[in-house]
Length: 87
Length: 271
Image 1 (cartoon, rainbow over the protein chains, first blue to last red):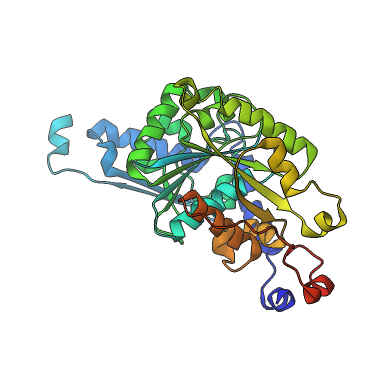
Image 2: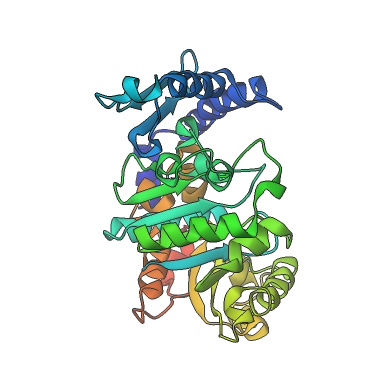
């Protein structure tokens, strides 16, 4: 049974290599300090908090670091009267 | 109220992270709600083993310092919806891990999950002692090899003295998980026997995980071994260990011991 499984499965080492390359590229770029995506995340939240009281429970931040592009999704629920309170 | 488990060993490289991920996934595959927490601040790897390394937004230190809510820092597994990961910080100093902060995080996790699995860093420093501090149950991961057994003995001593349970005069429930067990070497008599390790450490056996290519393959693709190949020998051993954690009494089989004539000819390599 062992052999059959060896033949039927794709190699896993290429996946390991690709995952490490992407991860280490991001980690090296951010050595010592937070990386660009993290900076953007923090600044976006700071800017928004200038204009409204951010309810932490209503903020969802998602990141996906890729080889060529990363994505950052900041999802904030803005209540109807948020602007008035901050003003 | 969930149960807090620490996966610890003293020695590095024995399989704490692999076991944390595999047991966490095995429990979640059974429908339980599980959070696996990486305590190795500065050298996190649980995210990589669980395949969530590209999705880390916030980490344990962010939560402790109040920079993020626990719900924002928890990463849900892409394959199992009841499995969550709380990553360690990669860049911050481990001094940011405060006893009060850890206590709050663990208390909140206990409320929301059936199991909170704390993946301890190697060593006996702050990260390791904080990972075990709030545990209800300890899993001591040991390889059948002298230095690992010695370090496990040291860790058992800490579990019986430095944890909240110990300080309150209660007995810490401890289990031995024997990993990287190589049946071929055991047969040649070049490896410590299961009974030898059990006799020296004298804690009950939770399971024996055979040394296996399947563990390496699973880490390559970023999947707990119980998810990567649920019929592989290590996966079956982890599933059984998870059932024992839940209180079932299953007999432990020593890998390789049931091997018959056919297996002796063809099954020399570890599963």
